[in-house]
Amino acid sequence: MAVIHHTVLKPTKRELLTSWLPSRPWYRGGAGAPELAKAGGFRLDDPRGEVGMEFVVVTDGAGPVPVTYLLPLTYRGAPLEGAEHALVGTMEHGVLGRRWAYDGCYDSVLVEQLWALVEGRVRAQDQNTSDVVDQEVISSCSAAEAPVARDLAAIVAEGSESTELTARDGGRLSLHRILRPAPEGSPLAARGASGHVTGAWSAPDGTRARGLFATLYAAGGA
Image (tube, rainbow, N blue to C red; front, side):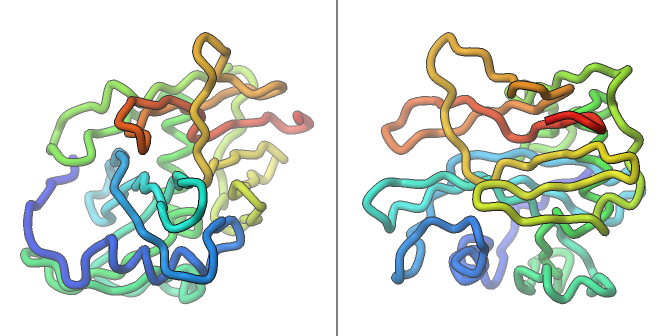
């Protein structure tokens, strides 16, 4: 179980993300700096209790139309070898000291737990409270079609709206970087998918939106 420390971070997560987000291929903002507002998120637990894992949802209001992003982050007490390209930044934690924040799609600890979340083997945890399940994050999966997760972080491809994580058997997990609310009453599952994770966040107009966070395709699927 991850322990949530309510303390000071320097720089803040928002400051780190404001600097890092424009460098991503799926960023939709303009030439100016992002104007980020927290919209939600959840956490996953590291079974070994070493790596912090958080899925941050932020909305950028800098452009003509607000865009909401899903940003998986890992927090480590030392640099992750071979992951310099995935470093979001470093910060000083009021309790834990220096922390290295990484794009979680390039950190095998988060990828393994994300895969387990889609398969229903773990539950999402509340973003702000220790040992509390986030009831709004829901997974669904056809166990017979779910591929085994092995060396997932080594096979990563960035798309215009998502990051694709591919297993050795060809199974693919698509993390939706840009979140879109599902129309009222419409099915949330993607066509041809064997599993998915859905979640909720605060829309710019103050309503509660819900949509796809991640989609799983079995080997040979769409």
